[in-house]
Length: 409
Image (cartoon, helix red, strand yellow):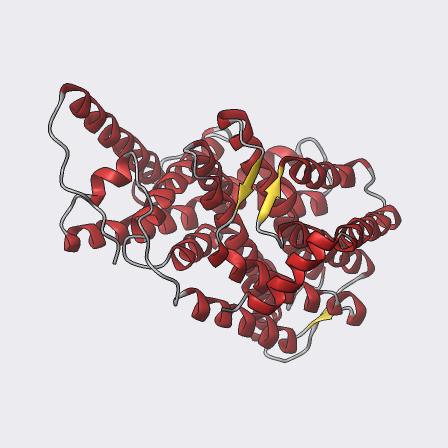
C-alpha cells in the first residue's frame, strides 16, 4: 500500500485558505452533480428546451470532476492501471446506455442497426481524434509541455488496443457483428482487466480536494472513494440521455441528418465526462494520467462496447443472427480501425508528441470536410499509409516490437 498520506501539515492562514477552497470546490462539484438527480428524479419540474439540456450538462461536468478525484484517491488502494480502468469504465456508462438501446431496438427495427454502429464508431474516433489531442494541447497551453510520456505499466492498455484493432479489421471483411465477435472482444477485455489488477500501488501525488480527503481514516477514505465513483456514475446515467435528447431536439430544428447526429452529437454528449476528466488531469500537470484515462476508455469502447452490441441485439431478437452492416457502416468501421492503428503505432514508444497530436486532430477534422463515403475510404487508407511510414522508422519499429513482446508483463 502507498505510504501516503504524510502527517497532517501545521495549520497556517494560507493552509486554512486552501482548506476552505478545496472543500468549497468539493461542495460545488457535489451540488452540480446532485441538482439534476433531484430535479429529474424527485421534483420532476417541467423544464424548457434550454434548461432541460443545460442542467444535465452541468451534472455531467460535476460528475466528471468527482470521478477524477475518485480515481486519484483509488490509487491509494489499487494499482494506477486498475484505477484508471475503473474510471474509464464508469465514465463511458452514458455511451453504453445509448448504444445498448440502439442495438436492442435494432433487433425489432433494422434501421437502428446503422445507428448503433454509427454511435459506436463515432465515439471511438472522438476519443482519439479529439480527446487524445485535447489532453496534450491543454497541457501545452497551460504548462508548455510538448509531449506526454506514459509509464511502462501503461504498455498493457496499448497492447490490448493493438490486439483489438488487429481483429477489428476482420469486421469490414465479413460485414457483420456476431456473437463470435462478442467472445473475442469481451474475452480480450477480461484479460486486460485481469492483468491490470496485478499492477502495483504507488503514491499518486495528490493535490486539492483529493489531498484533503486522503487524510481521512482508512475506513472513511474508502467509503468516500466508493461514493465518488457511485454517485457520479448514477448522475451520468440519468443525465446523459436527456442531455443528448436536448441536443438532438435543438439540432433537428436545423434539419441536420439524423445519421450525423447519432454518430457525433450523441457520443459527444456522453463522452464529455471522459474529456473533462482527462483535461483536468492535464491542467493539473498530470498529463500522463489524463491520456491514460482516455487510453483506458478506448480499451473499454473498442472491446467491451463493440462486443456487447451483437450480444444485446441477439438477446432482444431472441436469436443468434448477426447484425448485418450496410456499405456505409463497413466504411465507418474500416476508417475507425485505421485511425486506431495509426494512433497506437504513434504511442508504441509510450510517447505522444505535439506534432502527432496535431496530425491526429487534423486527420479527424478532415473527415468532416469530405463526408463522401468513397473519400472516407481513401482517408482510411491514408491513416494506414502514415502508420506504415512510422513503422518504417527503426525507432518506431523497435518500440512496436518491444510492445508486442513485453506488453503483457
